[in-house]
Length: 140
Image 1 (cartoon, one colour):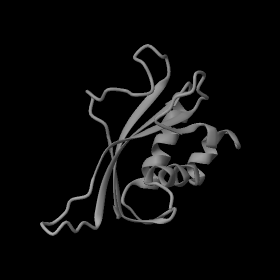
Image 2: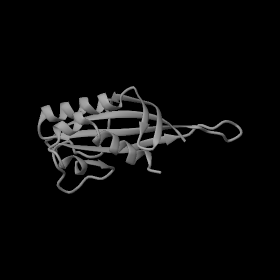
Image 3: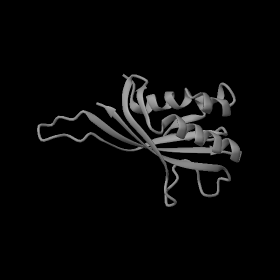
């Protein structure tokens, strides 16, 4: 069984709207979980898990996992960054169904607050960037 991170990456890369902005085969290398290559391609999507919890009752029974992710979209081109950000939002926001081999009960996307601390780009990197906060609820 794949992890939620692997399934999230496959789900993002599987979006026609996202792939349309990337140049063909570059898309798989341009979407990375918690790592940033030395010379990252542009455009690029970085994502990492911010938190995950599975609330349990007093008997120790769970059932639903609440997983929170940071997604950062970067590009040298402003229009590419905006188009990819919109495509990722459209793909994930209010989604319920299969994501890889996991059943997603709900996925919700918001823009990050202004005080968000960037994980993949520095303040002086010179790229256009957008940060999203994604909450995914799935069966354990």
